[in-house]
Image 1 (cartoon, one colour):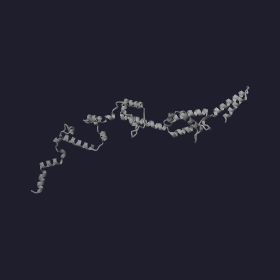
Image 2 (cartoon, helix red, strand yellow):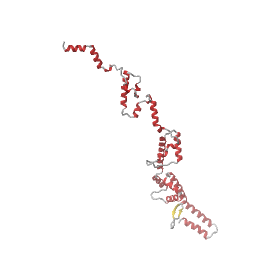
Image 3 (cartoon, helix red, strand yellow):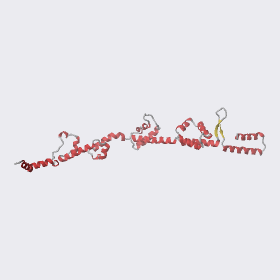
Image 4 (cartoon, one colour):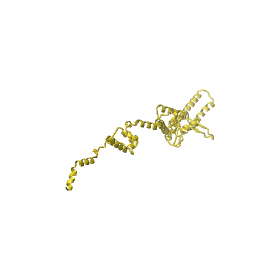
Amino acid sequence: MDNSENNEQNFDNPQNSEHEQNFGNNENHNTSDFTIPEEYQDKGWVRFFDGKTGDELRDEFFKSYDNSQTLIGKRVEDYLEDVNLKSLSNYEKIKENLAKQIEPQVAVPQSAQDYNLNDILKDENGNPEYEYPKDTLDYFGEKFKDLGLTKEQGQQILKSYTQFEVEQFRKNTNADDLEKDLKSMFNESGEKSPERKTVESLLTEFLPQEDKKMLQETAPNNIIEMFYKVAKGLTDKYGYKESSTGGNNSSSFRMSETDKNNQYNDIVSKLEELDSRPHTDKEKNVLLNQLKELYK
């Protein structure tokens, strides 16, 4: 018998055919005896496969391995977006552990002082940049506590509020804007007018030192303008102040045109009344000298 006949007989052999069919088709290979090796039985992760055996265990095992591979190098926030934590069997334990870790950040302070609000009012070197009275800080702390705010939340709110106040202060105490408004108030184009010099000398003369310092350093522009308006009203009514020509530092007020006209009319009326009755030269000369002084 030649080799071709032997090959043909072997090919037609039912046993050989069945063996080759099973060997070439692993998908149909019976794996019902698939189990977790004994050395891994005590591992915690084994509980995820409880109750599963054979083909079901094999499928779940490889599925789990594939999932673990997709998590390698994945950020926590990405993982949390893809996974519903509540669906996990150890969800309560995860929640408990997370709560312990973040409790200091989410806890409401026990007292207003525990907000340590002064901490956010310091620069990078620990020096106070801004200061609130203690009563103010206590007020903020109590309000934050009543609202259930965390320490960080309370501090950030006060920090934002302080930054807003500083910005408003700088905007309302702008020296260039103040100078522009004062020039408009006194109709100045260049050098300060006598009226403005008088107003500023009045403020310097009559304001206490602490008030002058407040005007120079902290007063908003509209408050300073209010002082100027009051002083300007006085100079408009009673004249502006000018230095004496004498050797001393005395000063006098120059009469306004309105007051000068009023005084002129008053003197003229007195002269007319004087001419209507007997009088001495001395009486008349007094009134005439007043007229001369008025227009000197």
